[in-house]
Image (cartoon, rainbow, N blue to C red; front, side, top):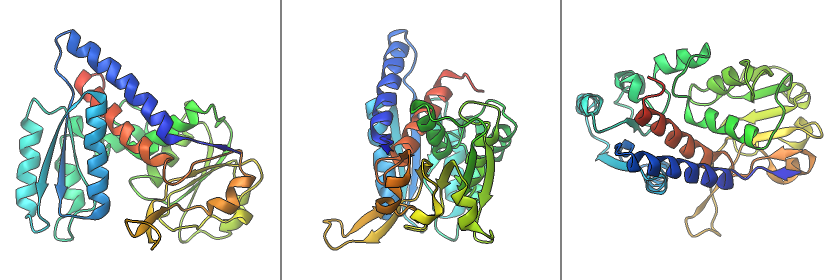
Length: 292
């Protein structure tokens, strides 16, 4: 069993990006600039945004954090998005999800200029991705493919099971894994809450990508020997032994599943760091104007 070290890969990519940025600046070009909008004080969102700001520093980017309380109106948020769309100094920006219930996440996503949508959530980017056109790839799926590539994990013809059908991970990673690329070219099955014979389907998978948000869901009897396991789950579960009072738990029963695998991602330190570095890659692409 080999552990897939997402933190190491992400740190390597950040160094590669920083070298590119240093070269850009030396040539008199502007630094890439990423802006983030954070609404409210959700613990997970606060942590993610803090990590993104730190990653910008490591990559040599300029970053701007725009904060609102959770009672901000949808109209106020849309106005800020319009301002960022029109701000030539900002190459890309994100609106950290989830948003308060009185705000339509889909309306917010669609208001973002798709050429600055470095999260890859806008329907135009999603549509272009689905038919293999250049676009900003959704960050977590892009990070997963990067890990598969850097660890030389064969995907052509592989039986790949995706657990979960979210717009952020499940659907886009399934689409990318079935495309004629490397990584990709796999036979993909998407499973969800209505799937029958789930255990049998998983037990025949060469690669399982678990993105359910259900701690410890994937058990050892669902995994065939030698399978590759990509655990996207990051659920906070109470843990009185930790200073924070919680720990992050993946969708895979790591302790019992890991011995059966050829490769597996840990939680934390697997897919999480790759999500953030994929956002950095998209921001660099936006600054270079090579996609749009």
